[in-house]
Image (cartoon, rainbow, N blue to C red; front, side, top):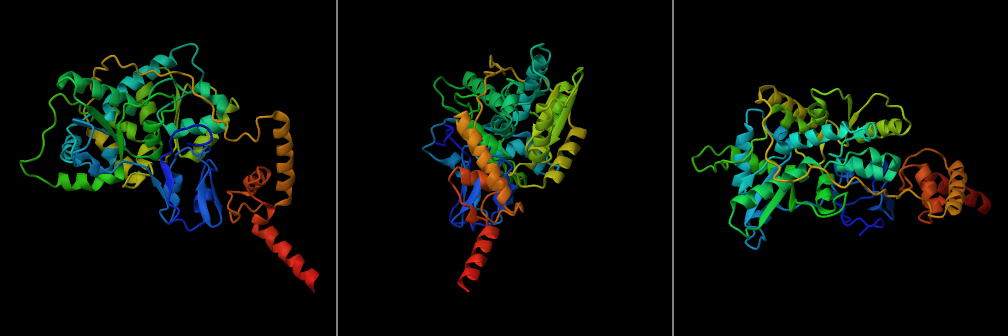
Amino acid sequence: MSADGSRFHSVILDQDACKGCTVCVTTCPAEAIRVRDGKAFIIEERCIDCGECIRRCPNHAKKARSDALESLADPASPFDWKIALPAPSLYGQFPDTAPVAEIHRALRSLGFDEVFPVSAATELVARATRAYLARPDARRPVISSSCPTIIKYIQIRFPSLIEHVEPVIAPMELAARIAKSRARRRLPAGSRVGAFFISPCAGKITETKAPLSGGESAVDGVFSVKDVVLPIIAALKNDGADRIEPAPSAPTGDSAPEISWGRREGEAAMTVAGSPFRYLAVDGIELCAQVLESCENGKLPGIDFLELMACREGCVGGPLVASSPTLARHVLTVRESSAPPAATPPDPAGEAPFRDPDLPARPALLLDGDYRKARAMMAEMERIYAELPGLDCGCCGAPNCHALAEDIVRGKASKTDCVIILKEQYRLLLEEGK
């Protein structure tokens, strides 16, 4: 358990594989990684599970804590019926000549009893968002709740914007609830039903284990997209008659608006289509940070809805996908051009798409709970920072000189961790010894 009380982080570090190269340190958007004694470590209360370190680490020392596909065949499994919940971004991993229905058949051949595409729940989420946008008390701009990494980033760095986050659950969670409810109505009483998400990112894995709004998730396990791609490709090549047919009542989730949720701007376009609301869609954590700063400063007039995706190109650019984000986005766009019109959303079976609107702030950046002590520490930080070289090289094991100054004030580092200062002190010692 981390210092802020969160129960789970899906991004983990393999200390044996870490070479202490500081690539992860200088590229972490939350400044949540340090290198000390030649090894990286993650400051858990600052981690937003964006998976950027997974993407960047040249030594593959950062990993996502997902489930093993082999667990589906485990005879000790606690589930009698296993439902696959493929993310819309999964369909961008295969050539557009492979129909969505064939991808679903391939998924079932891996050990799933049923496939309920997350895309089938997107219209219900979009409808709930439009209803919330129409409320006079909705804080503008309303921020989408689909990307859990963005929500964590807001909790840590932009807590004043928490009230702008829509109180709507993500499609993944709604799909799991609907799929399990429908299955239980069909299956014999007492059947144990499990829902398994196919995830493009680490953030959504964390969301299933420790939901941002508290409580328990309806998702029982998560497999990464990259772990299922090759088995699906192998199953797609099987043209024999032994292929498993889809369940008659299974939703297809293959309409153009549904598929579009896997890429940037797909959610926003579907949500505000045919409405007077105006939106801004942004991808990439760096650009999202700039937009959130503008939002905090009141510089987004006229924008009703913000779709913010931590990964470039949206979910198709997640750290757990196999295909190039640009290529995957292109494939989704091609699929959309030939996809059927929007389908009727599945019966929500009484599942409300709204959650508790109260999201807690995560004060991971507070220097001290005592205001006077925090002010004194801030003044000391600025004094130390003025004495540092300002190169932001990362050689000290901190992402930049300002972060090193903070670490020094917190008692986690010293000025001699800076190689420039250490070199200068060594030079002075040599001169004194002459």
